[in-house]
Length: 330
Image: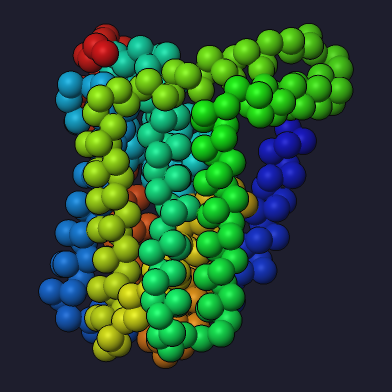
């Protein structure tokens, strides 16, 4: 109860602080309607393709023979995680339950979703590197955006190196496990102590490394498609308001928006994404008013429209797998 109260308090404060930026973006609704319909249709198709790539990554990681239960559970989990605080954790919990209802073994669901999440997160953190050639080539770029680019590249290098070490070396992972275990036992003294966390982390890590098996190339290709199509949808939104987008600038704005969407303080990063994306698009050279319209158009196809789709997917999934009888093996 205390944790939930604290989280709800943080959510309320965050939404209150971000309300002006969020309201400013939502007020651009009439201007979004004025965008040429074929731009909106193109953005919708790009987002649909992005979701299909995401389902493919998860299907490979889960070793599921069918994509339909993966798609319905992901859509429903995604929608649920974007209307309640908790973000990815909330979405992952619902998807896990729906996958097990569809017959996916619990161990497979845990390892598959974890491996897919790590692959998707790693690819996202590597995206700022794609903007480096343009920056080094001396292309015109706002100084603030350039500093943001170097900060993003440094964070990417640190996190990438750390992830590689944890995936290939036992010692650092065991040290992390011992440290977390020590802190956990010190804080939760009334609960039975945990004594095998380092060993469990090693076991899970080794399991994740083998989850994808010889299909890792297909998973990597689908992961690339997931972010490439989503990024192109944002580029289309900028182009739709009459700007010739600087691709590397929009790429950095896209990375900022995706990372802000991970924040668990508001559902789906609501408010944080709108404020961050609008600001970085302005730094990328987009007019402030047009940046607001482009932000709302992009969020319409990537955030708002998947919500009713997720509700429909939940009903379809419940109707097909609600009895709890196994429908999948793997």
